[in-house]
Image 1 (cartoon, rainbow, N blue to C red):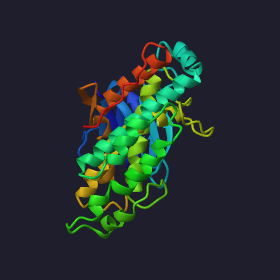
Image 2: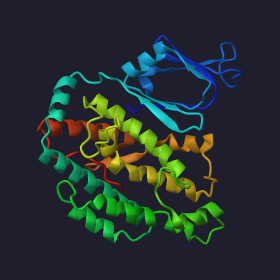
Image 3: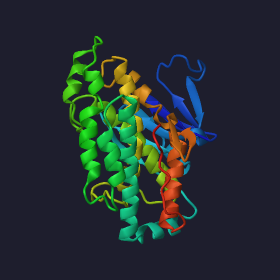
Length: 318
């Protein structure tokens, strides 16, 4: 069953009772008029985003959310996600999986990274094709990725992809905003011009979904295949989310097509990004929500580490 993503952008007091997340908004309207409370079964929750400095959350609720393998994202005063809490004990076979992961050979890691890069470039190519953009380079590069990607085709493909993905919007004859015209010069940069803000937010949600699923599969999100930044606690999540990024990009493209103001990131836009866990993905010909697809991917990765599979089950963007 797909889990729910909850976003809290207003002052609230969050606690727990009878295995429920209990929400109490000051001066709430539309909730229970007697108690001014609302409840959500904890077992239904996959991701919780806390985006207001006046949210209070009880320790008991945090413990129950983590025990349920829910991911808890905290945002700073500027509404940027800054923290991610995950369960430390998400799988009965965790010790065995950790052992297999830490003892993975260098050739195996290179093969897994090759598969990851191929899947990412292939999905980027599919998205360009859907937007009637030239994807010849990406199709060719996705076929030529070698073990460990020594030619760094992943970076080369990214440069081409980001230079072209929003080109139709920038050159459209429709009466779009001045921000849309700037898309002609778009560069992917975490600190760069919009819609980098939308991409950053969407990728944060995606990262939380992937990290949560890795823990559920008994894997250590810190120990990456390719990413190995000593200051990054989610290197493996950053590896495995790569082929899923184009799904977020497609969603943001659809938001930009509506000619909405994307200079800032108001709650209405954030709400649109919260559907990321429910986006359709296709793995081995079977469609499922993205959150379920990620679980298939991380489960297959665990089997690759154990020598029971040779290929990670990644989605194919169609």
